[in-house]
Image 1 (spheres, helix red, strand yellow):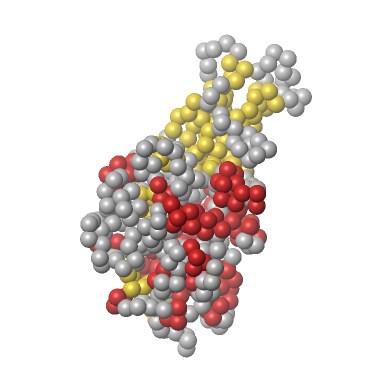
Image 2 (image 1 turned 90 degrees about the vertical axis):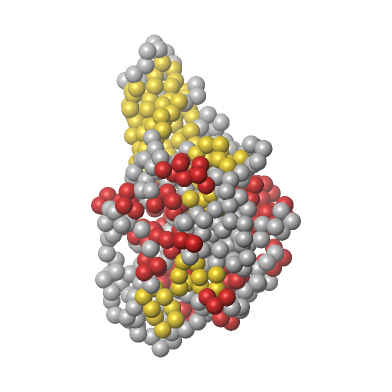
Length: 462
């Protein structure tokens, strides 16, 4: 029997916003000439040309900031360009659009490659210089001097609506740093969610339709209203996450920005940990994978209860899933690609599983009866698509907002010969993308896409 669900929205403003923005070019209107890299909205201060030589490589930064460099080195920011799934999908997008997709994917994955014109087409990936291949790195972030999202039609951060001024001045959370290698200037922007939102809100350049809204999910949340920003969770020790979520207060993290500097009362870590444990492990960053798994396991809570039914012999179990520690929806980002689902099974005291929903078969496919928390993206003709460049709109969005919850009901019949008590076990599983996506991109060389159990719960039925 198919499960029936009750879904609780904590942020209805997101729905209204999506309806308002859908189908309109909310970035700039018809004239995009002021944006050299459109549909990417990055500007270079003074509108000058820059080269790779204008940027300092992360290994040089690591000479003084060794600890921070080691944290960044295994992060998905460092691996944003090296991510083989992104590379495959960008190549596919470039080919299918005849190159008209332009910089829409490049800017947030190799910003220096984009602005120096070193990464223009997929063929450039083979011999890309080391600095451009280092993805989102020190000198890119710390050279950003302002944001101009307020002047876009969206009136909110998206598509890298920032200005960058590479040079001697490095900007960040401190204005009293003493260094001979570079000057330091305090930047309030670097401590704000808007800084992150300029890459973690992605709108189609041609239509303005929002395909990633992580920043907006946060903006309408209780976290935002209490001053908890992205950095308080994603640039902090992973063990601090439960306390931040429970108290809605930043947890101090004393430490050193540099091995030759004095201790400060609060230091932002640079692992930028999210949920991508799969790619971290594939790229050889076991530490980042372990931290990502830990973060996923702290994000949700689940409980089970028996539900009343008027049908004799029918058992109904309600599974409640709560987003307790993510400042954005679960899942977030490319929600049509992410998979967070319920694996529920009932077994008797003899260990016989007589009913299940959400199991994964030997080919990596999830049971068709499964309850999956994600979205369904469709193209202009209403056909489902996992290709971001073809997304016209979402047919539905079933994700759980911050501090929100979903209740799903599962109905089954307990066999007459079942040995009591019966145990119903539910697991909340997560993986970054379906096995079929990996198979389509990599063929016979496709890696097995693992799942992680975020949380689990049991219920005994006598």
